[in-house]
Image 1 (spheres, helix red, strand yellow):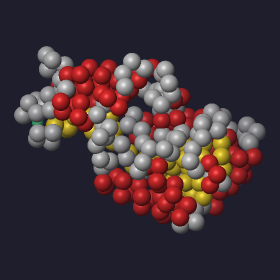
Image 2 (cartoon, helix red, strand yellow):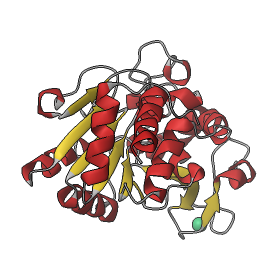
Image 3 (tube, rainbow, N blue to C red):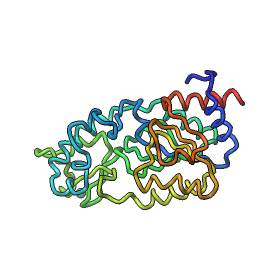
Image 4 (cartoon, rainbow, N blue to C red):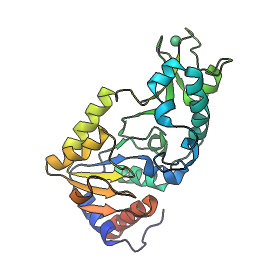
Length: 257
Ligand code: ZN
């Protein structure tokens, strides 16, 4: 990781906030995984999402009513996401946690790249592609076993009870897991600094988390391209390349040590 580069004023200021914060937490969205080659589906004309409307296909209704179509969409997506690797932005958050400067990471991403990078306290509020479960008997499988579950119609089916197998991700139309959301809220309320990285902060209820940190007098640092509803409330606002911005922050921390 490149250190010692000339850090921007914002990076230096954020490094200072991280050093003095009692409890800093990161909230991440699709933007942190773009450098890993996973396009943000909110960016028009990008990759996987280009030909289908995820709001139509990646829904719990579609999973129940037309599992063949659901899996036609999800099966290649699983294969593509399964091969992706964490990038230096994910690794920067692992490094902050290792230095006791970050209490945990809350993510909207299902790509399990934070886990793969080595983040220890990780709350995946939209679930993760890491596992799949049978809705009938609860049997669970790892991502690399998924191909063995498809029947001749291309529908993932339980090997024990022939029930439907669903990725452990929150599909459109599903509630977020209560336990994960409660833990995320607790972290946000306990944080005096929240780093919002690569998220447009527009998808609720996750978009309400920065409000909890602000309400208890905490500060926001936003590292994201494009505008967010919290821009005017943020103490730090960086909108460059997410990898470069986080490496500049790490560089500033190293310089000041
Ligand atoms: Zn089963």
